[in-house]
Image (cartoon, rainbow, N blue to C red; front, side, top):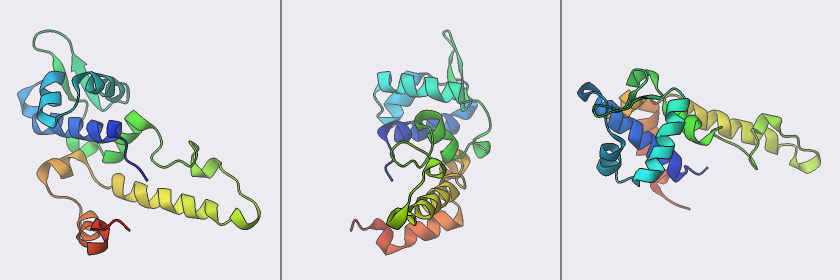
Length: 152
C-alpha cells in the first residue's frame, strides 16, 4: 500500500486545522507554512476536503479554513477518501469488484482482507487522537513491533 503525497498533506493540513481550531479560520498560507506543504498544491487539497465535508471555508479578510465537524468525528480514512478515493484498490478497482479464476482465485479474499485490515486502522484513528498524541492501543502496539520499522 502506498500513501500518496496528496493524502499525507491532507492529513497534515486537517491536523493543523484541528490544533488551531480555537483561533478561528486559518489561512491556507499559514497551514502550508506550518506543515511545509506547497501552497498551490494545498489549495487543491483543501478544495477536495471542502467538497468531502471535512473542512469549511470562509472568504474575506477574516476568512480561511476550519474543520467542518469536531476532530474526534473525523477519521484518517475520511480524510484519505476525500482526496484519494477508495483506501485500497487493485488496478484502480475496489477488491469487491474483481473476479479471479483458476489458480488466482485465492487472491480475491487476500485483497479483501488487506482492505479490511487497512480500514480497521485508518477508521480507528481520529484527527483528535493524533492531535492529542494519544493513538489507539492497537496502533501503538503495532508500531511498537520492531519488524514494523524494517523494510524487507
